[in-house]
Amino acid sequence: MPEDLCAERPLFGGAIVSTFPLRFQDVSNIRQVPDHQEVFVDPARDESLIFELLDLKTDVADQGSATWFLQDLANEQDAEGTMVLEQSGVFEADGLRCRSSPAIITTAVGQMAISKGRQGREAQNIVKVYLANLRLKDVATDVLITAYEPMLINPLSETAATVGAGLPVPAAQSGCLPMADVFKSAVTSFKVNDWSLFGAVA
Image 1: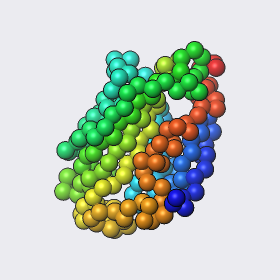
Image 2: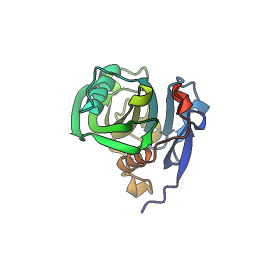
Image 3: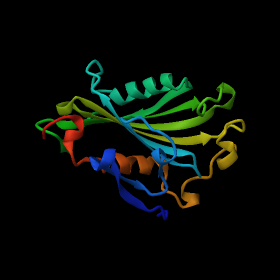
Image 4: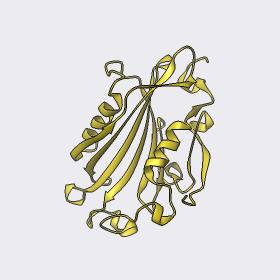
């Protein structure tokens, strides 16, 4: 088992908690992050984990909602060659409920070519994206948990300077928890401590 220390991390001022490796640093310590997001990154591997709170998209069906958000993300990031590699069915998270309805969870995994920041298409990296949509209907919120794992680093990407171009070193070889497991841990340990974050009275 890789020596990758995990800990429960406070999100949104501690109103939410989730468990994932300590190597993921809080980006808000470096730059401004929108209030509805919590962004964590491991700069040594260019892997990132993002928690996002959105208004519930009532026009998106539960079945396949994660895939819808994955495609939406790809459009937003001007991605190319987006492929959905897998998608889950609909699960109910009984332990995650504000009032009567348990959270509805769907997940999807995709692959896309995206550039960093303001870099152009010539600097695109091939990235695997894991996305979970936790639908908290009692508080009209779609929670997105998104994990990014670079599969191929473009030599022109700004990432190449720190991580190196080409294929990244496999996580296990680096003593790190593979991104699929980081994602799984973040999703399964996601817990709301204070529902008033959503303006709801629990």
